[in-house]
Amino acid sequence: MKDDAGRSPVERYSGFLLDMDGVIYLNQEPIADAVEFIARLREMHKGVLFLTNNSKYTRSEYMERLSAMGIPCSEEEFMTASVATASFLLENHDIEGKSAYLIGGRGLEEAVSSIHLGQLEGEEGRNADFVIVGWDTELTYDKLRIASLALHSGAVFIATNDDATFPAPDGLWPGAGSIVAALETAAGRKALVVGKPNVYMMQAALSRTGGKTDKTLMIGDRLETDILGGWRAGLDTCLVLTGVATRDDLEGYAPQPDMVVESLLELL
Image (cartoon, rainbow, N blue to C red; front, side):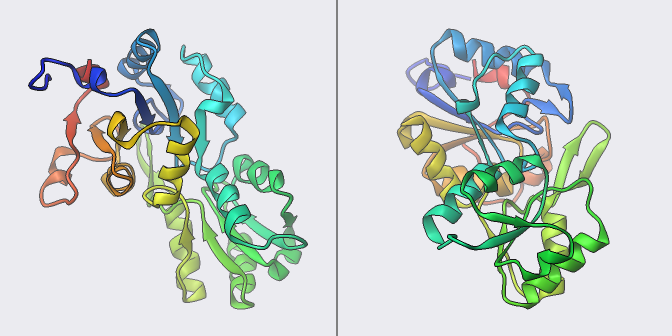
């Protein structure tokens, strides 16, 4: 895969935004070609930022996971939908003295705590000023019920992301978007989504890396989040077919990715 100047795609970019689920690993299983690809990027002194809509885990947990897979990294190289959501709230809402009811994991809890937005638990959640929803693998009907009551009382409705599914080795699991959809139905209104493909998260990622749009490549496995989000931010995009999207999904889809690969090693 070469351009007219004979350069490989990797040589054309100084920075890479990489989705994780379905790109670097499937659930807990690393994708071998991706591990090697990132090692090669490091050797070439390319900038790397891991950009994920998965709001469940903290940045330190992601760092430990990738390190265990043979990918040395630092916390500063991760931007999660939870971190982006906390930044969005801080920049766009008056949160002083306010409270939130969360549906999500440790990553969301830590991110919200970092901006000193109070968190209500149990039945107190119905009085929350914000309902913030991410991926929750311990979801219960009671959590949905309390969130619905808060939303009907006027709480601001925020979603870290709306990915309908989560790619796992045995197939597609329900993602955060499935939880968001249930609450949207119950509340009769839509959530404001911060994560990909929202351009806010993409711009925050570029700001973090200091990268330029024409020198940064967005790599992901989802057309409706990674590819659309990259396109909205003015980036070149690459779809890797190791996660959710298939070649059949490309037919009739717009915008089309700039590149489609079976393995990230093809970019070398």
